[in-house]
Image: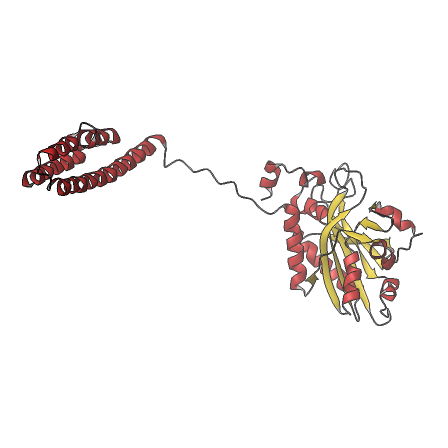
Length: 344
C-alpha cells in the first residue's frame, strides 16, 4: 500500500509539471490523455490493485479515486485559464480597441409627443390641469353643448366619422371641456390633449387623424387679454422669444369674439410667394381661440353675467411643422427612421 501511495505522489507531481508546461487548450488535452486517458498512467496504477491483498483493495481504490479527482479539478481550472487567454489573444488580434465604438440605437420621444409634453408643461406651470377623454363621443358633447345645433352649417365643416346616428369619432377635444364644466364648478383651468378625426383629404398640411390640444379657463372677470397673454407666451416658449404671433378675427359657434392664431412662417419669414409650408400666406395657422360663448355657459347652467372664460384649440402637427421647419405633415406618420433620428 505504501508503494502505491508513493507511486501516486510521483504521478501527481509529474501531472502538475506537465500541466504547468501546457500553454494552450490542445496541449492541456494532451496531458489529460497521457494521465487520465484509457491507456494513461492512472489506468496503469489501477491495474496494480490486483497485486494487493483483498482487504487492502477497497482503501487503495479510494486513494486512487481521490488522486484522480484532484487531477481532474486541476485539469479543469487550467483548461479554463488557457481558454480565457486564447480568447483574449484572439480579441486583441481581431478588434482594434482604439477604433470609435458604434453608437447604440436608442429610442426617443416622437416630435408630436415632445410638442404635447412641452405645451402641457407650460400650462401646468400656470396652474392648469391636464384632462383626457374618450375618442368617441355622442352628438351632445361634440356639438349640441357647444352651441352647434343639428341644423347649424358649422357641422359640415367638421366632416365627422359617425359610428352610429348619435356617436362619432371626436373632431376636436372640446367634449372634455364640457365634461369638465359639468363635473367642476368655476374657476376651471384645464388643457385637453388627444387625437381627433375628420374626413380631410391627406396633403402637406392635413390628415384624417391628427393631434390637438385645447385649453379652457372659466372664472370671474376673465377677459381676452388673459387669452392673448397665455397664447403668445406659449408660442414664444415653443418657437423662440422673437416669434411673431398674430390674432385674426374669425368665427366659431362656441366662442364670441373669436380669433385665429397664426405664427410667422419659418421658411419664407412672412414673404409668402410660392412657399409650400404656408401656402404663400407668410403665416402658419396654429388654431382657433376666443371667449367662451354665453350660450355654452347657459347650457351648463352658469350665469354668463357672473362667469366668463376663454378657450383655444391648436393642432399639434401644425405646431410641430412650425417648430421643426418641416414642410409636410405626412412625415410624422411615415415612420422613416432617418427622419425621426434628425429630430431625436
